[in-house]
Image (cartoon, rainbow, N blue to C red; front, side, top):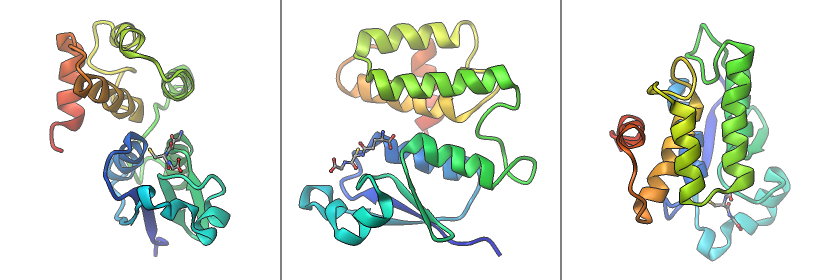
Length: 172
Ligand SMILES: N[C@@H](CCC(=O)N[C@@H](CS)C(=O)NCC(=O)O)C(=O)O
């Protein structure tokens, strides 16, 4: 039997990184429960959560006695713990494409790009495709969530980028 998966989320539902972790769990078709922390009230600073999470941030994934934070680390943990073919892939099988997905996800986190840089990179990343790599991977959800945030802040998305957002987040 699979150990329970618990995702710690922000109660306000405003954390894009939580959305990435949730998208990864859903893409892997794994049952999971959520525990909401009220960040405004500092529940992430609870001593037990700090000790177990190390970073005192959400998302945090609890599984088999481990607590993993950082949405990219959570996606990689899920990819390795629940591998293809028993579970759908989160990252491409091809080495170069896998590096491309990680490259894009790391850039979104480290560069924290403004709207102009984000839209320009996203346009280059898609080229004439609908996805960042040759088929869907978690970087598509990650990019769509970044674009949706920019759109909500007033950015106008070119049609291919709007289509990515609609496809990835349409059901929300
Ligand atoms: N790079 C992290 C970012 C996580 C993060 O910044 N989480 C915020 C909420 S969106 C948080 O937990 N903040 C709590 C705090 O700053 O005290 C990831 O990808 O998961």
